[in-house]
Image 1 (cartoon, rainbow, N blue to C red):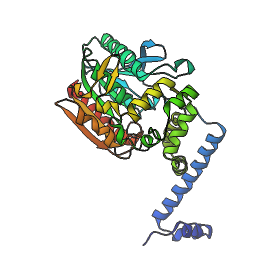
Image 2 (image 1 turned 45 degrees about the horizontal axis):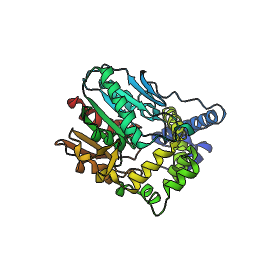
Image 3 (image 1 turned 90 degrees about the vertical axis):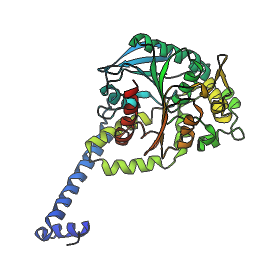
Image 4 (image 1 turned 30 degrees about the vertical axis):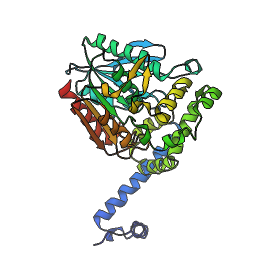
Length: 372
């Protein structure tokens, strides 16, 4: 018998003829009634007393701090000798996205795989930080953090894992600091060739955007402006997110994950003015990283000087760092061992969520493990 329309089943039940309905149809009807009740219950809870998501629960200790920057070391069995320094984006968002919830945390995954895992938290910036530049991050902050990782773990080499903006910044550090032994470098969704960077590249093009006038006028990029920029990349995102929320609101586990992710997605962080000026001028407008034209602290930054094993991960639907601009790293480094994979998902779903746990995290840990 063909499956009946839901409206026909409702009519039969309301007419007192439920016994005529197939058992499977009755089960589906009852299940949908139950989901509808749970949707309304959870909607009431969200509207009247929304719980505060408990993010960042993987145990850790602060091992170093410098101004706003913090270096955290996470608890693990540490079965892999080579420590991992994780370098996320600076500004834009908070790093607890990488440790969102138990069972849904990239950091938790890496510690369970036995890695001695360190996170660089750049901090939350204010007007007092407007003089911070990309050059200072590459020549001062990252070398200090890397040396502290080596000192704390009592090793003489480390792996560096960069995500988003953290990848080109940390790649610049690896390329220009050969005295710090980097055993492996991993780029997760980090733009390298900015001529292929997509809509952001168009908006920040020299002909369309005067970065000097912008920074000289505002001093920094306020958090609300950062938020507006990312919202404009995909204006329909909030609508589709809310539709998905309604249809899944019956699912308590989904709702828990949504609340944690929604908290992170609306907690934007300002850009220091000089960092933004140099980031736009030298990377987006000049594309100097892939061209080998950067000089930081008197040192040339040439990606061809990177010789350690390199692993690059792109996301097929990434509209912030499209795969072509990420993959470019394997074409310019001198490493004998260099691998690229392109996985389903977007810029955020590559690192967080069910898809990341199934597709991305095992690839990263699986590549690093035999090299650590």
